Length: 361
Image 1 (cartoon, rainbow, N blue to C red):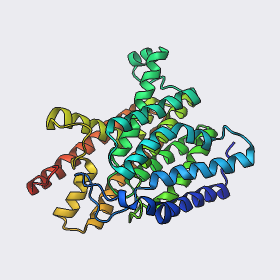
Image 2 (image 1 turned 180 degrees about the vertical axis):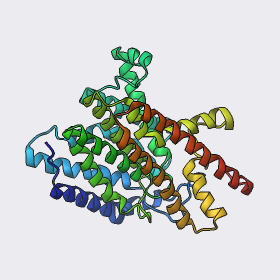
Image 3 (image 1 turned 135 degrees about the horizontal axis):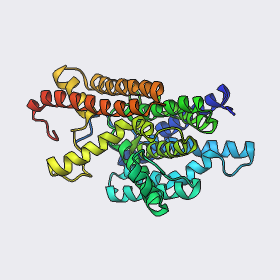
């Protein structure tokens, strides 16, 4: 049954807020000299800001795992399981946050290890994607296993690639979890409903420090963590609810997934650059430059408005999903429509800022 009370939600929120405050005020001081802002081209922030969001999220899981264990004496409570599966990707991401010297391939290994732990612990696989010939292949255990690792790793990386504006990754994840929780409630899937609302409460506690003014960044560790956790919930959700089309899942995560796919294709085939190296050609980056250069707004204003613009687009997408999640054809239309809108926005804005000859564009 639905057992997330207002008290529990407030508890999760308060623990998350406190963990973030501690990471911001005290833990960061230990690493301050090695956590200066990145000089990479995708960095659009001015001040040196602690990349401790991932650490605060991980600490929150640890505290709530202890509280849950003391209350239920269940060593398999959801927070303990989340700690286990997220440790590899968190460690590699956090080392990058404090040293900025961990190679993309090592961080990718962390994502793969966490994906393997999810499969081993939860015994869940991606069993269908809504295309019959591929679904038949996924029925073979080895193929299903490998494809699940790929999907989790892919979504984990995609959240890192959109983590360039204040609040963008966090609110993207919160909107996705909100959509899942609403559908789960309609489907009487109280397990997913409880976990989703719990995670929303936790993420809102961190969001207070990340949006609209960034006192703390998610960092690689935080972006990887929320991508991993969301992918795990989505896989369990679609396996719990066989009547839900896999296309619903695809539309829920269409923005980060399409951003990574498009960026990979663009870098490899058109820009002829290393696909692992960052640049300023993402949708959130060109929106930021649009407000900064064409609208002549401040950097803080441009950051916030660019983030809000993409969040609004995703909010409309989520409302569409909730209304049509039982209609596969409409969901397919929704996915195509999102991509078309993305491309129109991208093309029009990119053409406007090309004249400024910015490095990385």
